[in-house]
Image (cartoon, rainbow, N blue to C red):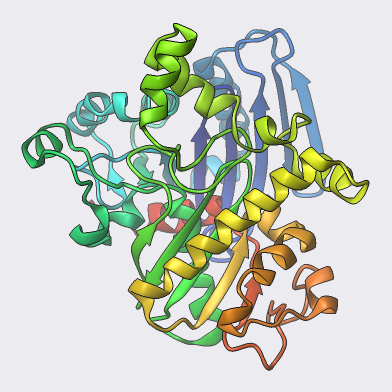
Length: 395
């Protein structure tokens, strides 16, 4: 029997990630990236089996980058013959898209209608879908939404205290993001523990960061909101901030609200607090060396995480596991230690040895047996989650 494959496409504003998975084994056959799109340094690199290849494609657009990727796929006769689905990450599904969805022209129009909800991402996501529909007209293209996992958040947690008619008219509510990652973490926990309806706190820490309260396997609250700007202090995003600051800065600096929002998204967070970088590796080195600004940035970051963890005990009431994931969550023993230090009142106890090894033990636990709630480190795999959802999507 010939193998079946699924292609995963993740188009960002300046990059395209891709992977090809063999469906039965869930192993990736190809894994690659086109970065620095629309610049002279645009570069495509990918791994296939045990080989690594790459070359420059100067000033390539997203569409041109995708065509290079498609050419690689079509040049592999086995993958081309066995390709059964293409899964596309789409950042924002708005009010309409609450699960993985097979894309047709009608759904493309609906996606374009909500592009203003994620102007930096959704247009690129749509470009990826349209290019693949043209290249593979007989293969089902599935949109997998970052917001979909959070569609189960109850009204009490998703509703903002603003005029209800305005909120309804313009779709203003908490949508949440990183849902593909939080969904993967929930399923991974179930696989490891055989707990089919776990209560979890999933902590995705990278340049973008969010926390999700998962009750009986479903998202019931999350730190990001209407946009990915809300919630935790992040690499370059401010996280939660008094909205009155927008108007205050507009008058003091004589700049537009759009410029302020841009600053809060791109020049705030760890980058602004540390005055060094948003790269946690650089900040940790400065922290250890005694840099006061780096220490303040990391301390604020960890404090904001701990506050959200504590607050999510309200919707959960009891918790089966606290899980760190994402680039920082998976690799920074210091950040995990500092976060848990704030939560001693929950009787959480970290194992220094297991924490320093990033949860490399078989059960991924970094807490001591005496810990009231087990603390884990899981490696997330959003691409595999997209592949699974795409394969299982029927309509």
